[in-house]
Picture 1 (cartoon, helix red, strand yellow):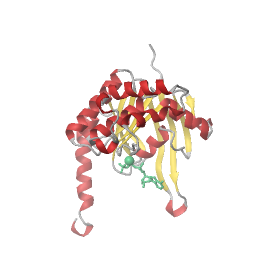
Picture 2 (cartoon, protein in one colour):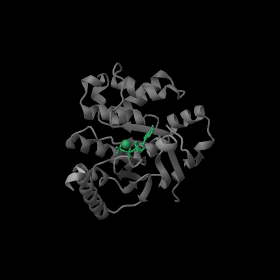
Picture 3 (cartoon, rainbow, N blue to C red):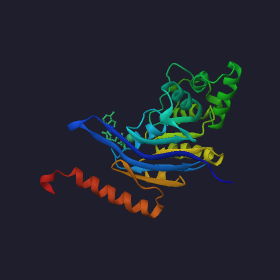
Picture 4 (cartoon, helix red, strand yellow):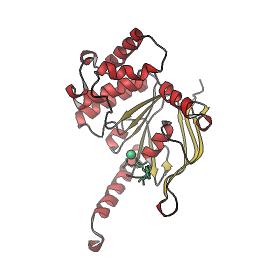
Length: 254
Ligand SMILES: Nc1ncnc2c1ncn2[C@@H]1O[C@H](COP(=O)(O)OP(=O)(O)OP(=O)(O)O)[C@@H](O)[C@H]1O
Ligand SMILES: [Mg+2]
């Protein structure tokens, strides 16, 4: 069966400011991600990973270039249609969970269904199913402050998958978690991917990237490796940590 392309980025540029303050956050990104892939995106701080995730997630528009999401030319869509596409096709998970503190886990997960034309009963059933899928069937009525960091992130994942998106986007989803909880969250992503969901995740940790099936490496606003081997990843991360150490030494001492 031929696979379908979920993300197609062609020559994407994102330029902030102008003149002396101009920043080229993305300079000519080309990327293809097919249905069912599980990718991680790595690269130095400031290399443009979040900027690209915001464009893929239709939270921001590129300065130039073409973006097709699940076959649809995103540039042609009005802001309102784009908001609907985002709600229907995409799920988001962030480093800082972004749950509403006054709502229970169940209510937080029911939120994205306000646009979906479904009854209150069905919204509730679907939210319970999503929370059960991430192992939180026994925490439906807890508020975020009554949950651990890992549990809060699981609520955020349930919220991201409740509309059954074609693409799950995660920007450093384990950045605020300890290593044990990180593994729990990665297990959930692996299971979701095994169930057919396309997952794209930004991470700074090579151990996290190794749990995915494809590693993409970013440098200075472009994709420099679209399928990085685990061995090459070891070399690149070693090289990067040496560069970071050098940068932290005052230049007078170098
Ligand atoms: N709203 C903005 N206005 C101006 N410059 C911006 C804006 N957002 C990002 N940038 C710049 O664009 C570049 C890419 O930033 P981005 O946040 O995408 O990097 P990143 O790879 O996600 O970094 P990190 O690993 O630290 O999260 C950086 O130089 C950043 O300072
Ligand atoms: Mg970032």
